Length: 435
Image (cartoon, rainbow, N blue to C red):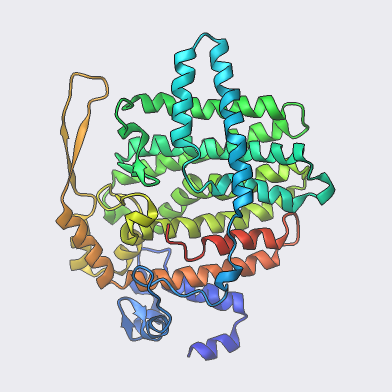
């Protein structure tokens, strides 16, 4: 049957059709006639499950082996690129702390330097380095002077600073304990709720860097507007995420999930680095920005589904953080698809176990009363078991492979702005990631 469908449909329509069948955007997934008429295993057509079983590797559960992109062809940031990017960071810290000292805030400057060192450069720095690499792909070699490359590096660090502002704040709101293999900033001894102000300082220091190094350029206003716009969009996404976490899992929908993902993750993680590089390279073609945004938001959705899967099934020693989506009642891809797939009994298990935790006040005398989160590990494990019973690891593996193929097709159809290879480098890097 699959072979017959391939003959009738163009490749991109065939992929899209299979994705639509696998992941419904409706709550009534069982109303899909084609699924009713097929033999299924764990909610998937049995022929697809059999196909995936042949391709499984040693990765956690069932992520597929990448046949389309050989390991040697995958993009990794060179040591030189990473070293050159890191070499700029001390200058960045000196610029920022120097401003604080002019206001007779020496202690604050020293504390902020510590906050910056702990929070900003410790991750993979993909967003920042992506900004630099995109800029290099956009401008002729003769324009890649040391001065221009350094500007691109400063711009990349601005993206990293915005990322740090978001994650420090997010970790507080989510009661997270670890990030990037170390305690979250607010969990570090002597920090606590000071982390809220530190996050605000990181965000606003980003604008000091933009003013100091870019105010003489024609793209300065566009960059300022871009960073302000992306910040607002992301905080809207964070608001959606928090509001949905106060709802029952029975109310989660794929439409809500997509709105959260696009606004909270995709814009700042994928569109911002590209758009910033486009502005610095002198691009002002609205269609180039539009086409780029379409592709990059698709990548962002793809990336967040991976993140949701890794939160549940990833190895904390590899991911660098302990997943909390289940106990935090997050509107995750796994939860939405589980509720689509589940029968009445399984839905009741989700309602009884998903997001169930207690909070015990430890100190009511302070403005920010500390709380201890009491997690029932048995309920968390029961949800994970149900995910497996519903075949979600196999569904995820199929979703990952077919999303990759569909995004790659869309990249090849773009005609303006960013070279195809730039998009493909990013896509190949995140495909089948485990952290």
